[in-house]
Length: 494
Image (cartoon, rainbow, N blue to C red; front, side):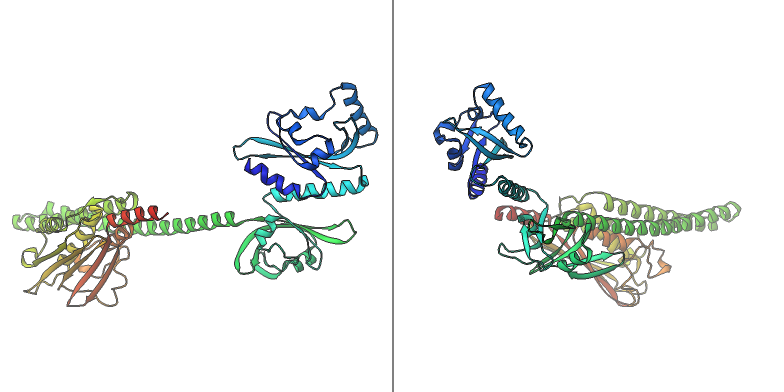
């Protein structure tokens, strides 16, 4: 009954207001002293009794009370007559509110004002004011009344919360930004009210002292108060949730635009790169049909084999790209030494592979988890590039892979003393279909896939290169074990 008690405590503060709380079985669960005084009962005589105890048992007497209210014109005003415990007739004003307790049980709150001691007109005004105040406290809309100078005549808690008006604030000093088409105007809220007089669902940005500005839907109209003075009645509804959803939606739209742009670029580049080896194959087949020299045929077959190998490589990269975009990141236990040795072994067929020294240095003293397939895609591309762009005339050509893995991350360096990358190209090598060197027949997808894959793994890549001297790629990959430990610690902290 915590909520009921709060409601009672709020309402009991009003003068001469009787309160009776009734549960969904129509039993009285709480009354205050004013209510007992009006009806002439003691509290213990009413608690847990049916609400009908307050009505006359005699049907004729009950009908008489309703008839008296009718002939006096009170049947629709809430003003009616009651009979007290002693049989005395009294005129009261009543209104009813509905609420729920903490268990979700519906409660009716009967509010009774003794109207016999004051003028009925004044009773109506006070009861109406109290009813409006009660409604204003329970709605989610901000409700505020002020005069043309900005003096606050009434503000419910929601309005004070939205505008960040302290409880004692008596003046409306907020500034607002009003948007009309492509233009915006900043002015005080009071000036806006005086200028417009009537506002119908205007989206505005409200400035708040020492707090972030907020979006709100503002409506206002000019009214005349009980003293005949001009005033403004405002309703304010927060639009922060809608604006947050709008920002998220716009972000998604921008992401989709970028995806579509990348897709168009991908389709264009892929079509070009698929056509080139196919055209080469088609031309070689036509030449082969007319060639009589067997030794020359062998040369053409080797050229065809290279075109097929290039197609196969390109298709593999497309599959890697698709997998990275569509599959979730997995957590696999990684042993770096056998992984890298296996990659080198699979590339033994590449040109000049036999003449290039392979160096592997591994420091791994902790368990490490990451997506094994994605990690292999990254290392495959970096090591194969080192082979492709090696210097054929160097006698001391090498490819060195250095791994330092701890409980939090792995740092992997792939070094070579090959052709290197020119300074003009270094910023573009991770772009889709960019080729720093056309002569090597690369697809231009490899390093783009490396970057995209590392982004998916929340890793990073950095390159240092000098033309004619060599290249060093440095890759950092976080351990999934460290991430899991961090999340567990965060749950414990919470």
